[in-house]
Figure (cartoon, rainbow, N blue to C red):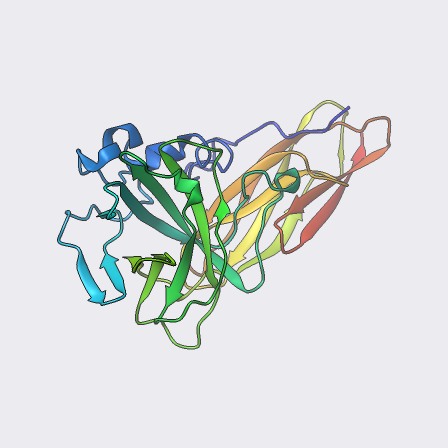
Length: 292
């Protein structure tokens, strides 16, 4: 018998869209309704709370002969006539990539991610997921390769995670998401506020000593964000050895330490005790519950 959590807890009302639902399917809504933006006719921009302010369409201004620099969500029309738009929503510390092994959270020790939406439109436009984006900080390209996918395949839009360094010795003066084209000038969409990253520490996983089989019980998760930016702590809560349970995204402000409750249903599977496990990619924490 599998052991699963009971699902999202209504007591955590500041949760962003869930990774597997909103980031895969509802990710299109983060464009403010992609179907209304395709082709650039509506001039739409992200409308969710985590999106950047709308940027009025402006003139595409070449920053140098070999590149074009745009604001987030500003469209770029290629010489072939089709359009690409990249919206930079926010930086995030951890994620779960589409198709990743078991849906486990990823939180590298030296990376954070820019969550971006990519839209292509017009005759001959490639699928958004086929565009290889990278990050540039102060003119340097710190991470090579294509970003992780955060959503399932889509024809109109794609939600992706572009890796960038976690920390900087000094705050970056400039940053951008760049579409690097081998036979044409780079196109760059500007990024704000990459410095002061969050830094999460799990300080507690509190469970009752004993619970009757089949009954729900509360788990208290204490996390401290010792960093300088509000972000979501990404983890999975369930039972050892593999916590195939609730996927968590818990919001913590800069410097904030909070205990947030979640609930699980006690499934001992014939054993006298069970082990609750919190897995956040960088580590795990266990707590044991006995059968009452």
